[in-house]
Length: 201
Image (cartoon, rainbow, N blue to C red; front, side, top):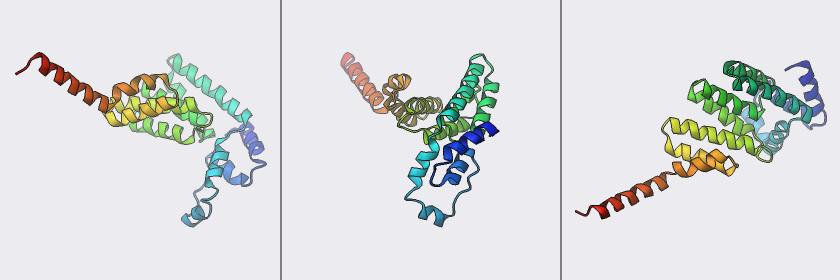
């Protein structure tokens, strides 16, 4: 993390009840509690998780600027360089959901391992705040649907396209009905019935 971004994180965390814990979560240096500690903090973990996901505006603007630069690299055909840039963004702020989503897309373009792509998409979904990240969630679920369809997992593709549609992704809205296994089964049964009507035994 750069000195500038570190200062921004200090400002962000100065009023936190447990600032050091939250800062470590954002910087990626947090070490897991023991099982006993986790049990004791279970009643506040949801609130803490919400706090460290809400990045301070200036830091978020900086991340978005760097992310746009990475997207421009990908659009100009420099996809591997875009991945490198997104790697750095994620290293600086491991809970920035959008960077995982875009890195997954870039790695799909490079035809890299599907498991790595799915892992990034799972993290994008995990760290996205549903209150203001509908676009990221919609894209991440839709990308998962595309990956699972390519892998031949029709049920997983349908489930993820359905979630993408739920978060407003237009591609997912079109894809989900086509991947619906029940609709496909009904369509096949109707087709067979019509064939029998046309050609009775």
